[in-house]
Amino acid sequence: MSPEPVSYERRGAAAVVTIDRPQRRNAVDGPTAEALLAALERFEADDDARVMVLTGAGGIAFCAGADLKAIDTYAGRLDDPNGPMGFTRRTPSKPAIAAVDGFALAGGLELALWCDLRIATAQSSFGCPERRWGVPLIDGGTQRLPRIVGLGRALDLILSGRIVDAAEALSMGLVTEVVPDGPDAALTRALEWAEALASFPQATMLADRRAAIEGFGLPLAEGLALEAQAGPETYAAAQSGAARFAGGEGRSGAGAGIS
Image (cartoon, rainbow, N blue to C red):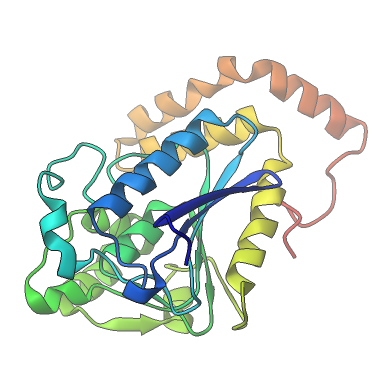
């Protein structure tokens, strides 16, 4: 465990943000929430950090949610525009990947849902057990979970409070990929994804990402208009890419290079 509850480390094109409170299963108290927000702002300001990888220390839990034994440290945070657990009411301008090894429960699930992609070890588990003791989902869970897995599956987890294993999470689309258990296995794989995403022309990828996120739920005509805004903004990049394609680049392979 480091002296600080959250660490920030650059690894290649990625910024690795680690919740480092394994003695509390990486549960987030008020000071940890502030540290998470500071890490996000550092990532946003770092033009060379193209992907954020969010993870938890210790190999037991990604994050067990809000630290209910330190609930007094949340005074004033419930209506924080950034989110009670640091940054959960914000959307990053660049991709984020959750590297999950162990429990991602309650607010910890909401932190994982905040990310674009979720890589999990086989031992990982996910759920909203706060249902059992009357704590609401206020870090984005009621909004992001239906967007990721659909309303029916989301209501299953939100209403029942049941915990699902990594295999079931993968089958419902909650998890992007499951990797075998092992020290840093999820983090290693998430970093591979990060480097692959960072290898793409960024302007067009970020424009497409923004349109997908901001357009979700809009009427089709409004969504198409939002998507169309990227055309003029990225025309020069598109011209360059088309020329490279005409020259034979990118006609085969596995997308982002993830195999």
